[in-house]
Length: 198
Image (tube, rainbow, N blue to C red; front, side, top):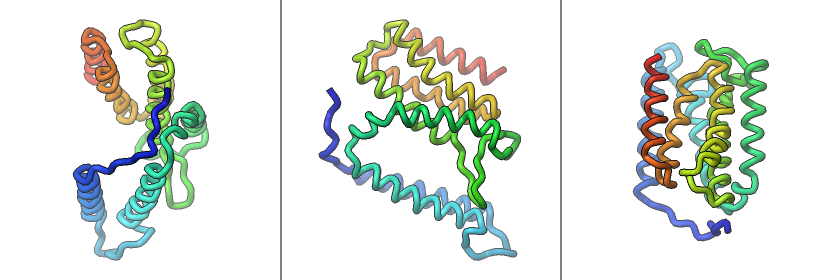
């Protein structure tokens, strides 16, 4: 049974931390991209684009908080499928930036499907664990979850963008909380570590 998310509680400490991180991040972007030739903040500058992105993201975040969480559970498979399709399309239609064909370009703005795929994978994994009432000490369950994660990771590695792909390894923390035995965690951690060394 999917719980109701109508009663929303906001943690002021988390909210304050979020705002502080945004401000520090934007100041870092502004200082690193500052130019005497174009000192003002506009959409033509990196800091201006980042400021617009912060504004849009804030509106999106508020909208998400106001939406009933059950809607995301219902749309999780659709979002996951859309993420996979976008990761395939970017390999053919994307623009290469920094040696990786990982971006869709729309005028002066770029969208990286790998970032949206993270949301798709998290929602798909959450729905799978919730709906199946799964136990992570079951091998078949682990194989199913690995497939959900490996598919977008493989597409991201084809770009290639190993940095974005490695981020998915953080899901092991979620699996540990859901009861993944320590032996699997050690094995997966060793595989990731050896992969990084390679």
